[in-house]
Length: 159
Ligand code: ADP
Image 1 (cartoon, rainbow, N blue to C red):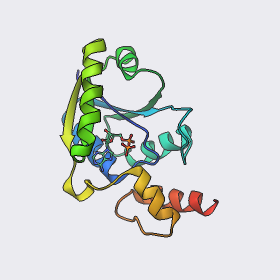
Image 2 (tube, rainbow, N blue to C red):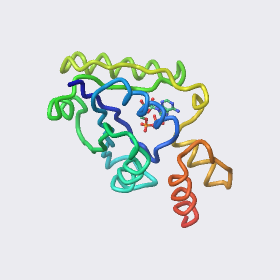
Image 3 (cartoon, rainbow, N blue to C red):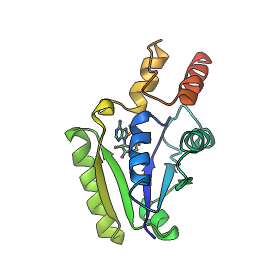
């Protein structure tokens, strides 16, 4: 049984995240998508809302489970029988930080990190950019799943 984790903020989930999650679900027995609970970082959506959106958009993948964690990712891995972390790499700008994290996680707990190169359709895509564009009236359809688009517009209209 190979169980892996895709960790992140997912504030909100984008089609770039979904692409990595779906491809990982084709390679491993179970993919746990773990939403990081970070009380110091301001987010647009609550952790519950992010979990809800992820649950909805991954519903067709039978082997994907959504969870949440705080503290060290390696502790979450140990508690859930997870031996590897799957990360998406968009560009070299992601690489330096991701390599440091990967090496530290291996050093701490022998947890492996596997990198998947992003689908070139989404290599420029990030949750923060999606929020910024929507905030100023830009159109991000095709870059986030439809239910996420609706919630994004509704939330930002409240501001
Ligand atoms: P961000 O890094 O944009 O703040 P997250 O923390 O939610 O977003 O990202 C979680 C993981 O998803 C990271 O490993 C990140 O590299 C990956 N990821 C984010 N956006 C994309 C994308 N467009 N294509 C591939 N992977 C992505």
